[in-house]
Image (cartoon, rainbow, N blue to C red; front, top):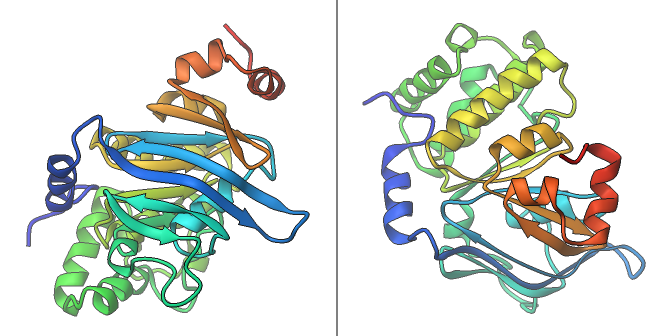
Length: 273
């Protein structure tokens, strides 16, 4: 088995051939997500993403950023609207019976969480090979070889038999990224993955994400780190009150925001040029 790149070659080739630069890769149409009548976190949200996009979602707390990722990952349902993925129906908020999402498409999305979510009772190797063996039916030998290759590329091969409790925060997050990549996703979701890390560890994780960006992995990233957002994003999306208020290239959003609400938010966290 050949050593994998951080982005597996076959799925990525298929992704780019099936979805040209300008085509919609993900489309949210009037998506509503509410935890109660008073707590509506996605209020008729509309958003398009191309296959070559790296979307960075910014906004105040409670604006629906993390909820968007959890909905896309199939962890939470929606009460209205619909989501298409790769030009196919993925999630339908009007469906009251049957499965709420397309399981085949669901398997093509990977997510990395703020708090790692590694299984504490499994070694690093065990964490990496579990899903490929269960989901894709990969044999243990092949899964182990693949895991070794990913860990080597992330500078973690020596931690193969370590347990999560023996790892630093940055190492845990890199293992979590490797685990998601083991399933060869076409889309990666990152939810505040550096917010719990010390500055040195933040750099470790951001470097891995930049490698993924260089290899054209489609990504949606929720972050409070505006410096990182500006450097990794192809497009920045500012959300507030459950809606997309403004979106555009990072240079435009961070230096010349068009909407007063965007400017009000950014004035608290960045300096305009």
